[in-house]
Length: 132
Image (cartoon, rainbow, N blue to C red; front, side, top):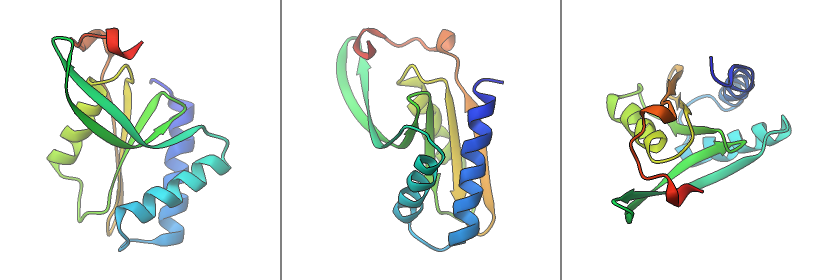
């Protein structure tokens, strides 16, 4: 499994935040707390990581991933009743638009939930020039 050891630490940090805060806060509260927890654990963390999307070499849009860990994992956070298909699709699009292959979707809803998604760079058909 790709980045298995780092993933375990990130998932443990998620549960630490969930166990301290519970559910009911806005996503931004969880994002800020998660960043604190990840940094305490020694990770390089970037909030609201800008992801540009290109088509035929021209920028056509941009996304902002909630958290990027060590420049190799994208974290998308939700505070919803359950993880919905559109949440997972959002994460997949972030992975498609970058050279990052691993994404973790966390839900701080009534029950803590997470989904791990891998999108191999070999399967991406995007112009990679802009990401160098």
